[in-house]
Length: 164
Image (cartoon, rainbow, N blue to C red; front, side, top):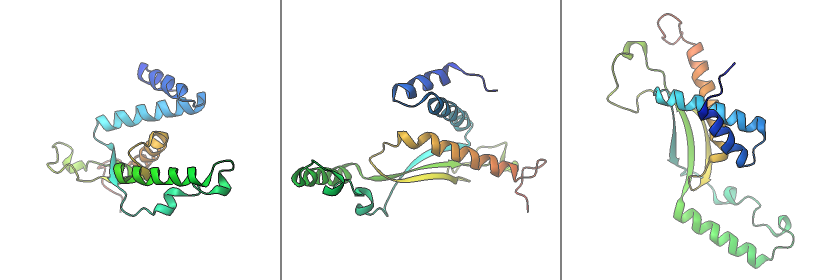
């Protein structure tokens, strides 16, 4: 059983105020608390990278289709589409990547000079206009933590080297 810390309570309250159900708010609070602890240990991180392969049609979806917006004039939809394109030009399109790393047993007692060493993608979601992925952070964090756990389980319990 996990102890409910003040940090978890605070995250839970914040998620509830954003409209999440009690179960979803607790999941988000606990997941992000775990991720933060692992991040402090240097084992996981979030990273924003530019999504250079997006297709405008995929980002738009059916948001500006008259048949999906009954009661909204075509002129209004066209204005919204234009504003959407301006937002893309101004804020860009991004991917939020959850990454983990295993510090090899041989390297456990010194800090790598190259901070990029050993990072592996645990999960990612692409196609964010701007850097607002709040809804997805807990899910990306959970998948990244699970990937880290799986990687650790697959290693030798004695020397921590990858099983061959």
